[in-house]
Length: 372
Image (cartoon, rainbow, N blue to C red; front, side, top):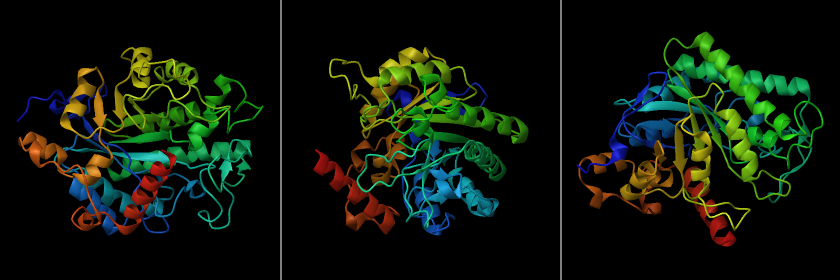
């Protein structure tokens, strides 16, 4: 077995030990029932990939019925989902793998078709710049308070069914990011306007979830937060905004920060003169206050090892774990030459990849190629 640093354990301040530094990040798999209940296909998919990896974060799970973002999305919005969520938590928690439920609200990145005739919601009635985007309904103060409560109830459910933690999805242009973004948040009340006020909603959710964990958790329980560092919209989130947010996040009751990037070593999308990787700037700003999970085009053991050697705490492998469910087991067994780095439609049954997931993957690949 190679002497990789990413095979070493990591201990969080609350006492939870992760057996290695490899993470399966949230991967959209579009395979739940229409009402968001867990399917056997999903359980088979998770069971194939768990057990070796240290930390397994579920796909985005909507905390409110009005927060559903796509067909086949997992839901944690109601107590009637508890049996399926329990099966999911126990399926992932094999051989010491820690199971994290990602909590999500799509906000304006939804539509009336997905929501069965209801309008999507957002901080302001501003459509996203995605093709075919609908104008969302601006949230009232009562609506905002209800969604904050929904996140707390979802965290309670995660505790109740046996997850080891939750991750708040503040990335990828969904609702928490929409409140932080000057593109989607044009409010002039206490929930928007200044940079500080645009932080208020995600901070309110962090602190409410913390109270729920303090009230209900009878064991150490992780709370993570995921961010996207920049937006290309104008106005939009710039790296300077995110670094200011980092200054606040590192004082909050969270256990780790997860940086969502397409390429782990990417530099600023908006400042070509800035040649320092975004994750390096965030690490410098954190100054060790929180553990960091980084992701983006990490596939080979040498790439994961570079992440750890550069002082990051966890390397997350997304699409590579779709292709190679036994990635870390093969590394540990000295079988790196047998690691799979590609897949085709002929591999879907073996890899437990459902037709909706395969369609999602191929559509996104085509969209990327078109953009390139």
